[in-house]
Length: 191
Image 1 (cartoon, rainbow, N blue to C red):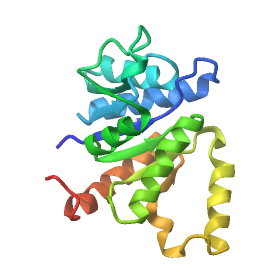
Image 2 (image 1 turned 180 degrees about the horizontal axis):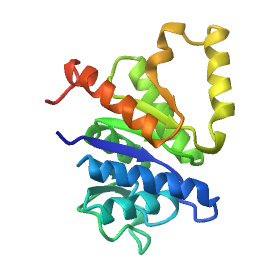
Image 3 (image 1 turned 90 degrees about the vertical axis):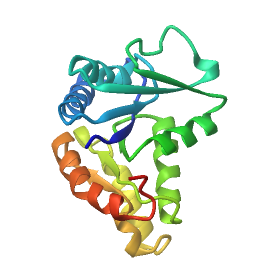
């Protein structure tokens, strides 16, 4: 059974190569598993790296793009383009299409998108897996900050399982596969 996995990540071409390799490895694994990539739809940065690996592996790709960003930077091999009027509607469409969410290294957009989904999960609006892939210790400081939020009771400690910090793409996929069963058994599943 294939799953639609939304990957949030950088669209910058000016980032270290180590991040591109991990994005490409994740895309390769997703294609091998016959999962579907749901992403921001651009050919640049980590988005381009994961999409290229999916395309090379004959994986299916959905690009969700704000209408005002229709341009030559859109990834040309998307199986489906979904256009949204603005960034908020785009986030809603990404959520509705996807069975799980992965954050690779990225900037403010990546953090905005993944934290909105964590908040929605905390309030019971979905039960989909959420993963940060902590390549090159990119998310170490964020992880420490989230631990402080729980330690000082700004969030309830029983909510620590809202998300997972994976060591690499293989660890992330193991977590996903273990948690898809829980998601399918939840009231939120479409299956």
